[in-house]
Length: 114
Image (cartoon, rainbow, N blue to C red; front, side):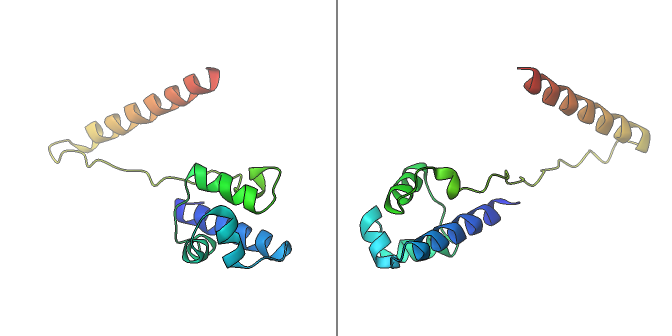
């Protein structure tokens, strides 16, 4: 799941809950102190939502738990890559990639132990 997918999933859940309790976008907007256009953008997955806005939505939608709105799968960030210098031969490039891989695996293991 990418970040854009996260907001789309959130928007679908907001819309589903709003419809389930039988209120309009305008009513949800009034309850959460948003504009109707903001609610429409959230439901369409076009707008990033702050933590404060999530709590306002949860309250306006009469939810007891915000996890009903938030997808539990973490979005995957696209890995960034740094091109290796063209002056490295194939053996040196492989050694650098291995060193980076080992360092990342070690860091992940340290976080799990913490």
